Length: 298
Image (tube, rainbow, N blue to C red; front, side, top):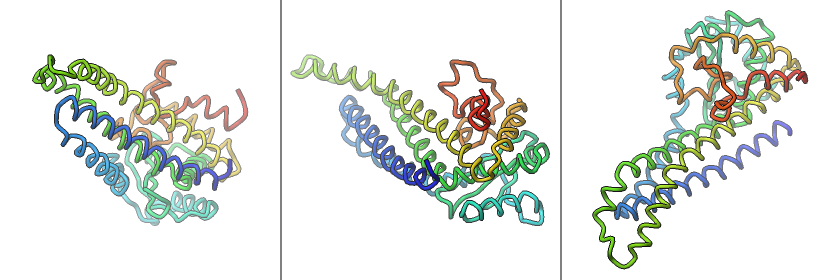
């Protein structure tokens, strides 16, 4: 799969997933509005989903940079990292993203922005200090691949809509019994109401879990693809493999890392060791698997 087919695939996936999540929100909204006997909830659900999607699309990058404690730098502050980013951006045929520094000893990096023209790349001071030039190039190439493949746009929309599904489900589970108890259960159609209530409860419980699993599975897949694209960009996969190994060995979390932004980073910034079961709920593939894919060694 080439860089260009990755871009086309991501654009199609963005439209498809946006439609799936919006449909999920509408269905949840209808079930909730029926059970709570309030048609207004359906329209509120649709407006909320669209509003959150637009907010994430246009402001998600600024929010992520603010949460992470990143600060913009000029070329004179760190010409080395600037030259690496500029050279690899030219090689990739991408606009040079805005460069940010996170003052944190934990080595890590992330890219954000809705498209290559509005992209930003943030690296920690720990990454700059602990990695050599070829390793830094591998990390930067990985993040530029995310930008070029429109991964950031895809994941931003997915994260926002997963949050909307979870919010609607939580609100429904909190108020379902109070509202349903006010209905006349002996009226005609009472059995149908009960069936719809059961379906709504199951949907409210399972929808956020399913949405989150889809989000995490896509996130892990995009990390593998960005690794491959980054290695093609530098023509030296060992550089990225070595960088991933160093980053993974640093077990302390980033000071400003949160679950909301963890998926953006090149490696899990929360400093948690992965158990076998937790891999299913991880934003990143195991480092061992990523290194094996890069080097061809099991």
